[in-house]
Image (cartoon, rainbow, N blue to C red; front, side):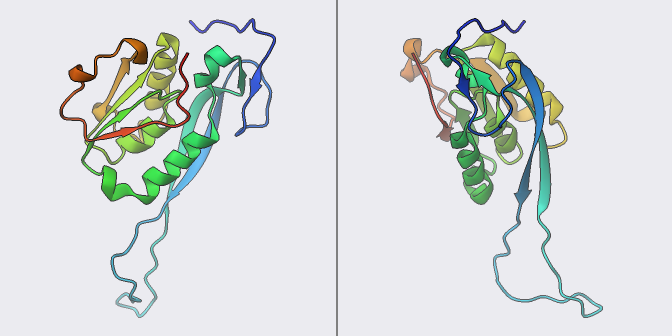
Length: 179
């Protein structure tokens, strides 16, 4: 299903240090801090200080640590981590919204956004990469809401902008690459 790379010029991941030329599975950890609208100090019935503990999200991700330029979507890039940080610190912008992710790569932002959005349409051009997104959504079924994830092939060069779903409210993309 996943073709081996033959290009001798490989791009190494700027997120993971391993240089294995194969699909690997890693766990990423995110902390979801719930913001309290008021900054007042609260105490429980016993007089103990009430603290908001961050929720820990351990996301399992199938990806590659190095690829040729054509398969760069199989890697996790820093721009994706920055977009994840934005998603997690701006939850109310995405809560119950319909989100389109362009060039989803391995689908990390899709997994996170699906936790809060009403629907996430995760797109990429590479059919094998879409299978990786499906696998990452399946691996993280305890974190993401699988029923609100829609995975579709999208070719930016042949896309009719007039055909875009009128229900889409937010479009996200990180490290978008096209040929």
